[in-house]
Amino acid sequence: MKLVRFGEKGKERPGVWMDDGRILDVRALAFHIEDYNGHFFTHHGLAQLAALVNDPGATFIDAAGVRLGSPVARPSKMVCVGANYAAHAKEFGRDIPKEPILFSKATTAINGPNDPIMVPDGAQVVDSEAELAVVIGKTASKVGKEDAMDYVAGYTVVNDVTERIVQKSNGQWFRGKGFDTFCPIGPFLVTPDEIPDLGDLRVWQKLNGETLQDGNTADLMFSIPFLIEYISQGMTLLPGDVISTGTPPGIGSARNPQVLMKAGDVVEVGVDGVGAQRSEVR
Ligand code: ZN
Image (spheres, protein in one colour):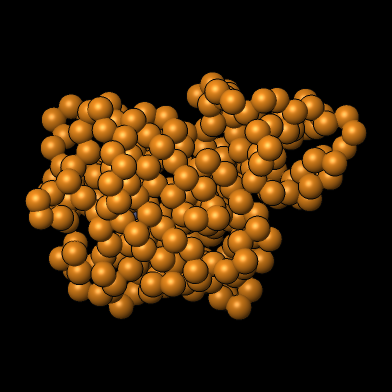
């Protein structure tokens, strides 16, 4: 299944993307499913959705022209992994990390997958990072990697938009990665049954049609099960939390000459089999 949230920003409704140009309007039939939030994942929401799709009373809408939001409601936290592809660590001028580098993006930065990305006043070096992200499906505390996949609700795409000058000049990455609109998520939350091999997914970015990133999850240094174990040892992951697994090499700011996002550009990021985003830069 592909879960979507559709409608006006801040008023999105839960839906299921049908691959035939329609969206199942979940709340039209199941009033108790308010949103794809912690309550939904905790109360067997995914199993209920699977039944709704085949319900004779199901209501569908035409997906054409419909705005999509992030496929998960605002999570309790976004845990991001830095330098998780060796070749990206090198282009960013870092040693290959011995353990995951974790940081967070502000949940107020979350943007729809096709919403405009707003460059803040004074920003000079802004670029995108295409990433595979995991959405947690049940409370995870001290979970071993052998059990970690039981805690996964599904997968999505995150664009970890970053202002590099602020990222590098501030002691922390939080501000440079936390500006409003700097975290497009989606378009889909794809359930694990639709992903045959997590270890072989193409992760890519195009700016104005030109390919900047073309990596593969085969090159992730710290795997998703390891990350869930590592994070959950001391930090409880709640249903709906998002872990963004890091970006492959090719980012625009590491190129010579640099390829930077500016107003009027169109950036596309995607993970094959999981989804693709298209955002105008303003
Ligand atoms: Zn990143």
